[in-house]
Amino acid sequence: MPSKELLFGTGGIPRSTKGTSSISGIKQIRELGLDCMELEFVQGVRMSEDGAKNVLKTANNEDVALSVHAPYYINLNSYEEEKLKASLERIYHAARIGSLCGAQSIVLHAGFYQKSSKKHTSESISKALKELTGQIRDEGIPAILRPETMGKRTQFGTLEEVLALSAEIEGVMPCLDFCHLHAREGKENSYSEFTRILSRVEESLGKEGLSNMHMHVAGVEYGINGEKKHLNLKESDLNYPELMKALKEFKARGRVILESPILEEDALMLRKLYNEI
Image 1 (tube, rainbow, N blue to C red):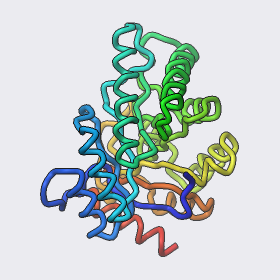
Image 2: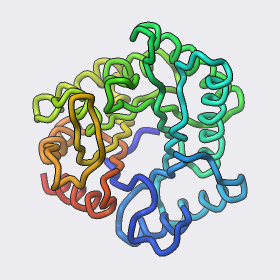
Image 3: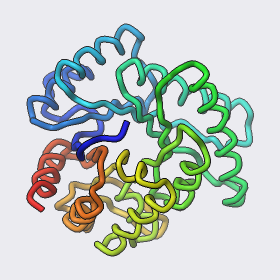
């Protein structure tokens, strides 16, 4: 559902949370005055249906918007039928439990090129996602699958690749990770480059592309092969003030999820910066 504003929050529970549960994290997001949180199912979906319903109730009570990051162990370009099947199952499970939590956006790392051409990889991943979105739709699960732009050159997930999937498949939208876009080639780090990215989103996906955005932001250390690790924004070369300026200029709506080591501090800092523009 398109948002009327840009929401800021954390990838996972805030560091200042007392306890380790998603419910504690949601309450802490509200306490901090932030707007949203991404449930990290990255090591696997370990939440029951009843647990998910309790999360939904808490999120509604606290007015905190949720999304989900699907497990890392996914490769929709796997040559092994068993691994492909397991990858689809993990995304499906994340979407099913995530939607019971009230999360519509399910972020995923789509896969690796391995020895395939980029064209063949795109076709394999497209085929897998068509099958999965069909199943999700048939079962009435209100989830949008969001392949993420990736920071290593071995990974499927350039801006063009992710936008092409989103334009082609109903039920697929992008997750734009700006530190990954920057780390992949060492570029994409100026106002003009940020506006070019947002223009491409609008060209590919129309107005909804900008009114229903899902973004990850962090500082990043990178090298010749792309991303190495996440950094705090102020310790990195990511030009986040210009990114906020571009998002404001384009009237972007949706969510900005912070993934830097000091999650909530950077989320609050970024939101303050955005509001002051």
